[in-house]
Length: 85
Ligand SMILES: [Zn+2]
Image 1 (cartoon, rainbow, N blue to C red):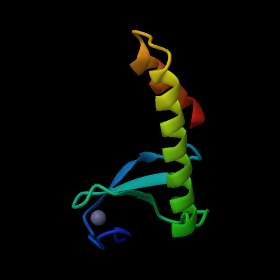
Image 2 (image 1 turned 180 degrees about the vertical axis):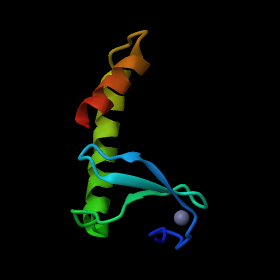
Image 3 (image 1 turned 135 degrees about the vertical axis):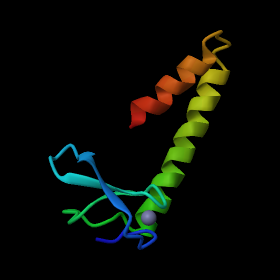
């Protein structure tokens, strides 16, 4: 078996996924993967769109929390960001 990222063969078993599939980890680059992924990797266009949406959400959260003048701004900010995921 090869690492999908760096093609190394230094692979160890690394537990299971949420779906019960065996997970592996590359000792060279640290990449974690499953042998036969059932879903296609997310394509670049989708990744770019998600990144953009997350950035917009971050900006909105920062503005909202910055205007609250609350001592717990950081906690508020974290909560708004993590609620998205
Ligand atoms: Zn690797």
